[in-house]
Image (cartoon, rainbow over all chains, first blue to last red):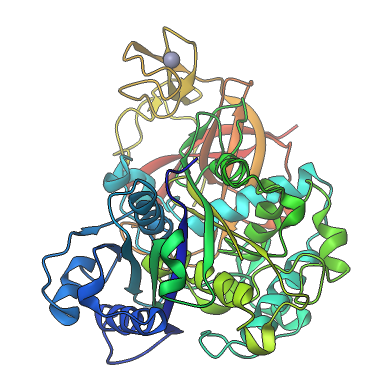
Length: 383
Length: 141
Ligand SMILES: [Zn+2]
């Protein structure tokens, strides 16, 4: 448990998608300014910052725009979990008692198409990329193919998941994909990696999110509506888990880092999965949402199909998932993606989510990111 | 991508050294940890299970079962350097006798002819003009 509880007292975002002519860094600065405004503070009040971007330069150079105040600003780089890592580091810094007020920020601007592979950078032989095996899309498809086989599940549920993402995105002014799509349109889009079609995948994109974090006991001096970060849990993979960029797997299956990170987040928060009222989970593609629903403990393996078909994961269902459209409708700017989930959960907990507000005043929210080469971060936020 | 008959000697440049041994039929070369018995592919510097650096190279069986698969339908970015023009190819993990599951390209790229559990064998394929890699193809009954 932590020495000092942590609150989120300010949130800011630059809309996701394509913003031609605006650099990733400029989008990051936009998000930080919005978060400071939301918290009613100025940059000179910020005592420390953690930030990351995969393709848009060093986050700490944001001080050139925000102000040269000598604060410690540490760059974070953890693949798709970069945002979760910045948040983990910022929350731990406040929890330790070292500082009272800080910023976590993530931004990115990726070129079109799938991410580039860098075998040597991941400790793999170049042959792995040369022969066409180093693709995250392949990994998700193969993990999903085995998962559907093991749990005797059909493929129809995948289009339902993606359709929900686009429907939620159509209600989100900050989303990239703002047009609802039917399940038939999603199924009929070009096959990318069997059984996943183009519209079931998210794309690398652009965007930025910043959060202002404070000691919980001082939160009300910044906002009348603090959201409390009850836990942040970060894990890498164990021997035997099936992860992206693996030329081989052990036949002895181990739990994924998602399972361990989620369990850690629930245990540390003293909250049960059945208490979660809204969740944002990693949906790199529709099958990832399906598998992560159970890996996070939000439901049991095999239960997803009935839940999704019954609309339980839609806004208004018993367990709304990816209420802002998730990665599928927002795209994935690596540095910002994990923080987008927290931004959405804060909106939902404040009751500020507008047309996509989860009814019934949600009081417990969960987030989960997953990324290469097998890392996961989960959080519990409450009001 | 055409499967080749088992070669009596290396048929041409391999995409990388040490992935398979020049046996007939070709066999993948795995690392077996002398301390804990865990298998890896390709042969690693250290064991991912117990951190030992005492690793022995071992030939995997020539055949195994397909554990999962997909078809790669778009051209990957660099460093992919497969034959032009791009043609979709299968990818899968093959379970070699419960020792280790190895990822590789599949000779078959038609999803209707791929199924979890099918028997496959290791073969060599020319994935780009003149350069070979290993792949898996269905064992003909
Ligand atoms: Zn070992």
